[in-house]
Length: 204
Ligand code: MG
Image 1 (cartoon, rainbow, N blue to C red):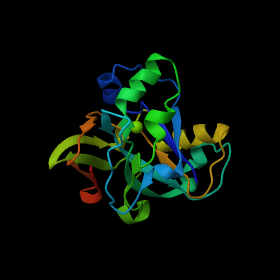
Image 2 (tube, rainbow, N blue to C red):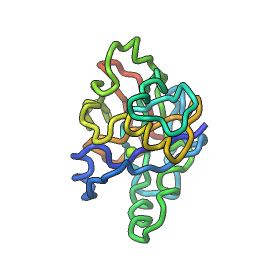
Image 3 (cartoon, rainbow, N blue to C red):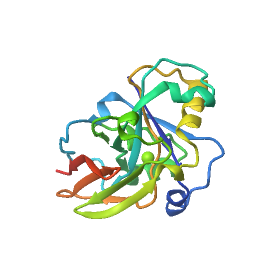
């Protein structure tokens, strides 16, 4: 199982980090050791002083595929979740300044807390019309609709699969909207999808 993440997929988030708009999806990987399931806490690691939350829609791949056309991509997923792409922003800034990959700042242990999965059929909504938000200590810090993505889920799946085969159970983090910010010990994060609180993560 692999976790593929998309960076820079919402315009306002690109602007808040002073990045430029990509003409193809920006991709990076997290290992399976990044996952935190079942509402378990996140323990602040000793190698960073600035960990940012990034709340994202997550797609679970349901069928093996390679070189999937955009028009067929819908056949390769049925379920979605919310996830946090936790990022050591201080390390990432160093990596960016040295033109190094984002491996350590993005792929560290427990950097991907994730909710349970919900079928799109059950939700009764199109994948590009889902409302989601993130609350930090009860205050809304991120709020978006998946229609605001620069690259749609189907375009992302098609693009990834030209380079990397997708297998059943692979996860795709589809990018974060504006409003990213730091966490500190004691913070409580809650992710809301279509009005339902589905993701909980306490920082310890
Ligand atoms: Mg992200």
